[in-house]
Image (tube, rainbow, N blue to C red; front, side, top):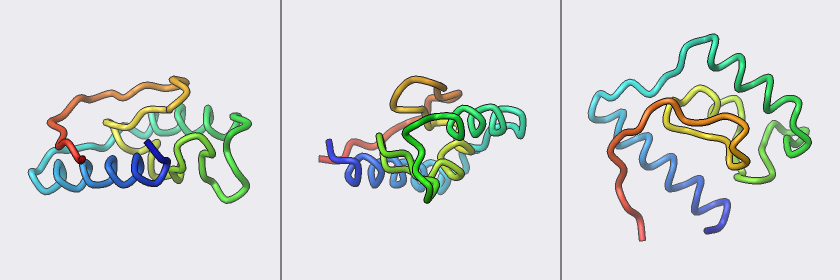
Length: 85
């Protein structure tokens, strides 16, 4: 799946879950740990994007259902997902 399609799918799923009142935020401690990992990763661009998944790391690291495509940090929460074809 392309980086764009993968990112769009993740954003759509986040929006659906937020509309249902699901809290997708992580604690400040988790967010800080995730961001530190990303900031030390060679795949983080100067624009703050991951060249593996195309995400903006500052946003992705704050979402409990997100995970690093290289498995450097994992999602904290599983929620209902909608399949996009």
